[in-house]
Length: 156
Image (cartoon, rainbow, N blue to C red; front, side, top):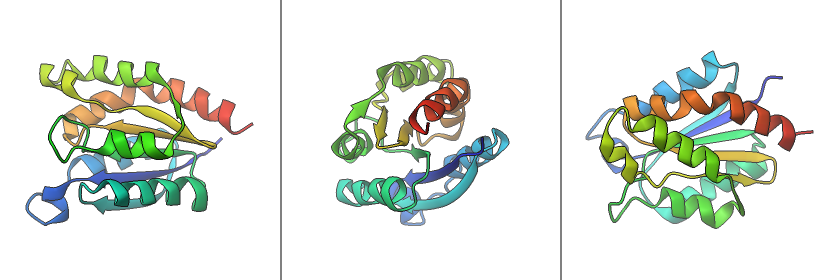
């Protein structure tokens, strides 16, 4: 089955035009190669209320099966992607978050500081990956198979 996906990049630097977003397009490419149809992409600044609105929009209005947020998962004061996800997604899937961090530590030990989560809103799974291209790839690729299984269970 082909699932629709959304990629929401969260980066002040990219939003303000100070740095090109490399991780968001890389995530789109990974998802498309895995057979997803990326139906929506957007670039946001690190504002929790705006992130919450976009997550709700993707899950409730666009009804995508998978949302991957890119960035805002660290421990900096403006890194609030996990909080935005938790605010609108009542169910957490801790094993996926743990697997993402375990895979990314090979890119950089500092990625153990990532607070990204995997959570569910209705029939939509939300994954938070790092805003670094290599880390985002390392976090996402190893979990694509269990994510596909989860989406099958959610969308019966």
